[in-house]
Image (tube, rainbow, N blue to C red; front, side, top):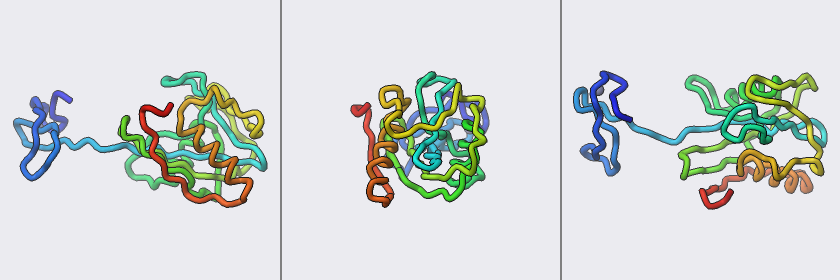
Amino acid sequence: MKFCSQCGHAVTLRIPEGDNRLRHVCGQCQVVHYQNPRIVAGCLPIWGEQVLLCRRAIEPRRGYWTLPAGFMENGETLEQAAARETLEEACARVRNLSLYTLFDLPHINQVYMLFRAELVDLNFAAGEESLEVQLFDERDIPWSELAFPTIGRTLECYFSDRLERTYPLRNEAITALRT
Ligand code: ZN
């Protein structure tokens, strides 16, 4: 960050009074521009024994398979964000959302929050950010072609928990070293 988004003046990096971290502070209007982690919300859409994956049409990881997920917007709930991303990327409607995996990604300042969700019907299709959208049985999951560690981990948890028919909330940290 170089310039203040409030007044356009140059910002400097310093520790504000009473704070303990470096922040971008405006030299003109004194506004402190805090930067905080961003939330990625999404779904693991389920149809019977199958799960819905999307093949990414955009970078990063274009051509790799992912779950429908994206950055939460202001003014929506987490669940609304997850359902919206599923509609945008897979043109799919979901119901009975249940928060399932929560990943801390401190090296990229993100928190992933993914819901288990039932597909309402089979009317899904590739949205603008997807090349294709497809249902997979467990044995057909393209494990080596998944876009992000959060996606693989969520699928691992799901197929493991499904054996027990119980789905506890999974909260894990994924660091830069684990890819
Ligand atoms: Zn300013």
